[in-house]
Image (cartoon, rainbow, N blue to C red; front, side, top):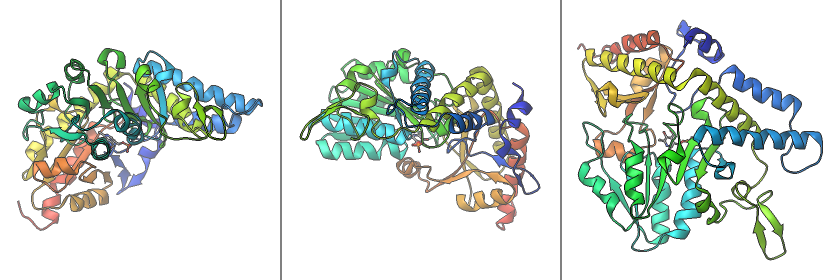
Length: 410
Ligand SMILES: Cc1ncc(COP(=O)(O)O)c(C=O)c1O
């Protein structure tokens, strides 16, 4: 991987801050956009912009081609059977809400269980709380070992309960950094017919996805976490399930015929894409997938592994650092969350920000997990393939200065 050439594709990484190129370690929140993605959107907007599926003029046709064509790239990216199974949404959150509204709230009832994990992002948790409340289903949790971040084996047995009708979890936790191998869990849930929803927000940007091999029923991810523009997300769903679901939003372009009292809906995937579509987002996602695939999964993986390993080794040398989740680099994917004793995470972030380093602090939309771990908030450094070991070293050096700056002489 030619890191210098890659970084040249991301002009924002050259932003000057504290006398150097900014260090952007908030990639789990959103990634930066390379020039080929921005150029694809610029090219679409300057030569082809129109409203798709609604017109016979050249721009309407070009917009339809751009939008529909991008679906084939996403299908290939996910290894889905058909573009009928690819629904564009705004982000992972909207994808999960779609499943909650259009599947869970109409297919579950009293006596049923929704099973999620304590490590879930709020978008994969609050959604199921409401689905449970509305349907009378019970919401239950798989808890994690506080040291290793792994699911508690005794809790995994909950998957086998035939009352569990829906299992939802993130393939990679946005706080623990742990990857939960989805395939065996999916097979286990399927053994008694449960539907499985995978939150791929932190996995799809970093490793190949094969929804057919996984055999998941739904898979959600966000374009903005993998170099596309904000506002474009994807929900993959098995065709038979999607066919059996009511549309989430109603309006233009998702209908077949409309009468005064009754409407019949369009075929998949249009049934779930009401209103004028976000063609610029779709164009950016297609370009982003091409970009990421050109960098290559092996190169992405090896770069991220290097960065995580160096970070963990460095953190081990700094006194008063408390890691969240496992400390073994082999158990972490692309991010490291931690706390500095006696210093509020927001103070850590502010001190680092003054040095030109962007990290995330707070509960990272995983408040129940933080409460379970006994911490109110944490700091998180999250990487993408364009980050460098030199940036990690600079971050570690500045992190060393945090406690002294707060008046502690370690
Ligand atoms: C694991 C996980 N799920 C879901 C989301 C929600 O993503 P979005 O805000 O793009 O909908 C995030 C965002 O950080 C995440 O990390």
